[in-house]
Each structure stands twice: as C-alpha cells, then as structure tokens.
Length: 112
Length: 116
Image (tube, rainbow over the protein chains, first blue to last red):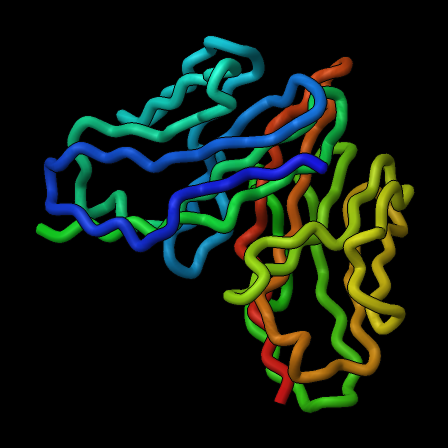
C-alpha cells in the first residue's frame, strides 16, 4: 500500500540555519504530496502542496519539489526562526481519493 | 469562516464510561475525517464521510468506536465503553472535493482524551 517515510527527529538547529527534512513516498498511482505543520497544542495546518511531478510548493519561506524520479518531497527553508519550532508531517493522497497517508512526523527545535 | 470546530477540547473520564466527541466541519465541505494521534502510532485515519455517508471505516479500532454524521454540519465520534488505551488526541478534518482533484484537509484543534 501507499506509504510515506520521514527522517527521524528531533532536528535541532540554531536560528538562521538551513533546514532540510527528508520525505520519500511509495504509491501505486500519481499522488498529490503535502507538508503539514503542527504547532504545540494545535491541529495540523497545511504548509504547502504539489499535485504533479516537478511542481514546487512554497509558503512562508518553506519549499518542496515533487521529484517523481526519486519519489521524494523534501522540505527546505533557507533561514529558520524560533517560531518555526513545530512538528512537520509529510503526506500523500493518491489522486482522486480523499484519504491522506501521513508520515510519522519530524519535530523541529530552533534555538535563538 | 471559523474553521473546523471540535468540542470538548479536553476530556478526562474513567474507564468504562461513554465518551462523545463532537465536530462541526467548515460550511460547504463535503468530506469529514476523524483521526487519532498517539505517540506510539502517530496519526491514524479512523473513518471518513462523504456527503454525510460513511465511506471507509477500516481504521476504526474496534466495535467500541462508532461515528455518525446526521447532517452536513455535525459529526460525533463515540467510544463506549472507554479504556485507558483510548487516551489520545482526536482530530476532525474537513475538505471540499473539486472535480476529480484532492483538496486540502482542514484540521480542527483536536480533543485531548484521557481515560483513567
């Protein structure tokens, strides 16, 4: 079945450091790919998405490119802030269906 | 829009008691999802509805769990009887189907359930 694999956390960075959180997927069809973020005590919020190969999703300085050849959707940000500390979830939806398959989440801790 | 609304935000109950969690989706959304989040198992889809009809309940852990959606603006997730292993954060989410495309799921703030 479809699955999403994320890098283990926590990821600990200093403010203004470069961020990469790896995400790879397995799917039988042509999935849409998502990054969701969960701040402490809150629900998940969509951060960005990409619906087809080579699409780049971006929001709030975060970017991720849909790479079909490597089945990856890595999240990047050039300069993290303390306020970016949260848990980040990679997810896929297998085109036409509404079910999301989530990765296990990666906790990001940014220190001043 | 107010977003997805869940109540209560926190629930503490004793083993064996009935627990009812409530969700109001975003107006106009035709899909509703119930998820459970635990440290051990991560985020799990329990059940989802389309136009108030349950489509897939394969994630519901056992018969103690039931979900209903009597109308487009309200859904409940019931656990009867509750057990300590049901302690988790339960999220409700809704989305709008757009002509063959998957649209964004919008999550509520969650209900933190503790069963003693």
